[in-house]
Length: 153
Image 1 (cartoon, one colour):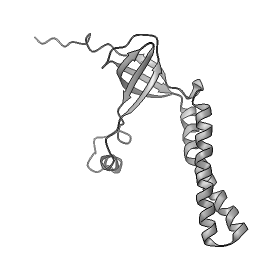
Image 2 (cartoon, one colour):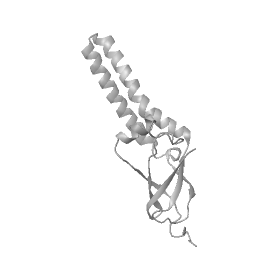
Image 3 (cartoon, helix red, strand yellow):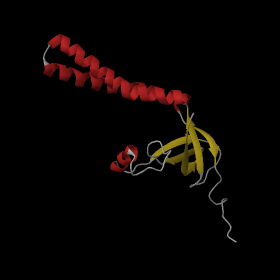
Image 4 (cartoon, rainbow, N blue to C red):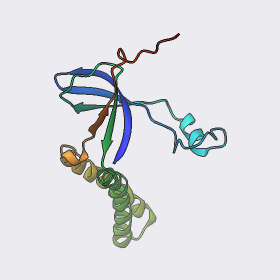
């Protein structure tokens, strides 16, 4: 199970809107200046991911929630997104190379195959996104922000 903590943005009628902040690379060390993953993340725009999860327990904005998704469904999704266009690119290029024998047609076939691979991946993703295996689930709910108070002596 892949786990991540998210922050509640809002909760209405049993549906919570959550914000997940992306982490750089593995996050297991403090060698930020020499790490290639950290440098690549600095190049890209700052982004946050939002997702909606059905949960019956009322939540407050700012509350932390641990969400998880099974590794198998995550790997199948990644394979669908990355491998389907790649296979289409290779097969389209190979087919057009055998049919037309010129490099221009081979390149066109590869681009056409990759485009069809993207469309196929999108169609399959639309069909499987409703399945419960591909939906994140709430694993833990943290205390509301108002409950957590630090008393100074």
